[in-house]
Length: 356
Image (cartoon, rainbow, N blue to C red; front, side, top):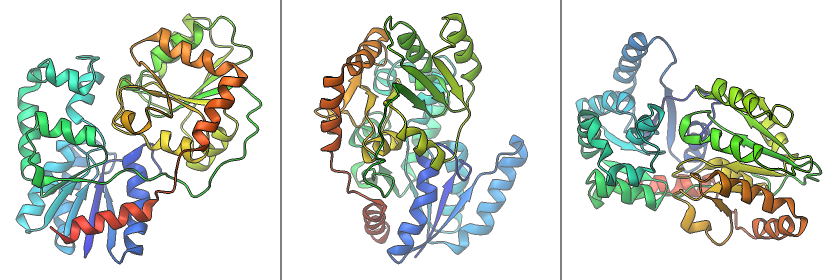
């Protein structure tokens, strides 16, 4: 069986789809399946879309299954057309909610996905909503990473049970910990600098702390919000303790984590988070958004913050300043079972693919 994995993220990029595209082919190969990756190239739009479609036309006949790691219609509609034409199976793993993310980035909402649909705000994108829903109905199998995301798609896009499957996240990495001394009080945010990652509230929360006791915040990443976030830090007089760095490769980021006191992920919503799971794998304390598809699984373990409340994000950071609190939290982190690996994910995918 041969699988063509499709993503719009460049090799070595940041985020779950990139990590999936990098790690899953080898894990599938270990299970006896062959998998290749087609990455849509970052070129001028018209040329990019045309080249992507012709690459699909050329490659699709060579594979049994097309597997998209994106919820974007720009990725999925051409792939679905090719799959139908050549009578191949088509699967999709949604890493999030395409319509909601686009609405947030365009400034149309600040609600969570469920609030966005429940409030009827998606009706402003009636054509896009109908197109996205119609695409989902023609997909052979949608492989969800969280039960939250599955329930969202079933409730608002009317995806039937028989089209749904579930494969939980693995814990990235192979080590059990970084062995950090964590002598500095460096808090870290790393990821795409886009609106729903909520960087502005994080900066305001950190700047509002009166007694930082030497604590600093390092923001790692690139994106359309970076210039605005840098201006905000300057306006708040926080340039001496809030720093910005470019995106870095994975090995360098792990070294950064080893020196970090805590990672903060305050997103308006996260369906899941490979970065958060990697923090748990390497025993790095993390403050995670309460609005997450992983909340129920880790409600008794992680330190969660309300992403809409600057005061709550600030309070959670200050709580970790206390040595006893930090040590208590570290013990909770160290107690998390992080044995699930890419091999488990590949075996579960194989079972799904073989039943198509």
